[in-house]
Image (cartoon, rainbow, N blue to C red; front, top):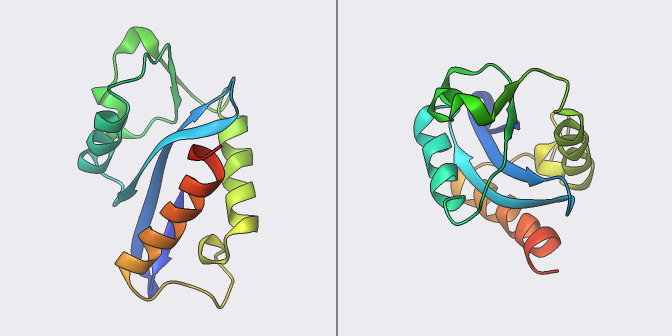
Length: 122
């Protein structure tokens, strides 16, 4: 999920793993849209037994095993729905709001705290 800090040239990406049976985020990472940030998310997911991955065709996903990797929009509807829910609930993720983040640290802490409270502590 894309957002920004300060202005739209300073992009910030929220990477998260969605568990469809529990309907919740199980891990998340912040950073740029790169293999490095995706690798950070994979480290967080190392303790989970991931059956399959549903992603778009972004090049960072080349790190995933081909036999468990499904690309395309067919299975990403729930993820897109969760992106919309997060944008509706968090002003900092809404592209046309006045409540944008002015520092990377506060951006990550506020969104991370919200995800932890809503998804991890239940």
